[in-house]
Length: 164
Image 1 (cartoon, helix red, strand yellow):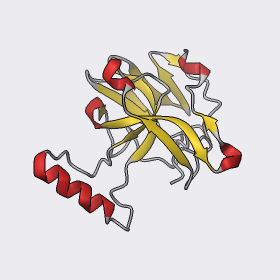
Image 2 (cartoon, rainbow, N blue to C red):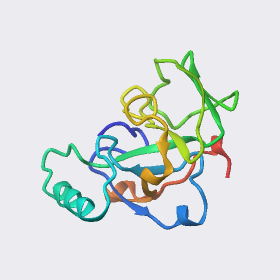
Image 3 (cartoon, helix red, strand yellow):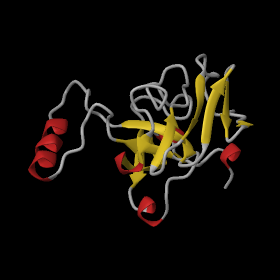
């Protein structure tokens, strides 16, 4: 979908690595693939059956989401007047499509959760909507490389606003 434009576009292909979060927690600015918020967590045989349903889901309604981590546990987040405030500091987001139109109240990210948003702030179902504060266990992996289309091949890195 269009929720990560202009960073990522529909039908682009990416490589997602699934190991680093076993070594350290998610970081602000990471682009992550997360389980569809409408898909419950399953275990055992139920998880296998759910995986099969995903394979044959032609509607795309069970597809994972892809978003950017804006805040991690313990951070405060607020959106006011089109500006995202992280821990009281305004973020200078030159990587987004447009400034967000809707405000979001001052909130603290709970333990073992992150706050995610699409780079297309006004066309994204994310932590401001059905995703809510995302449990870290629902993160499937971190997007690290776009390999298709060939004219847009690039490594995906965190914006400078989030630090190194």
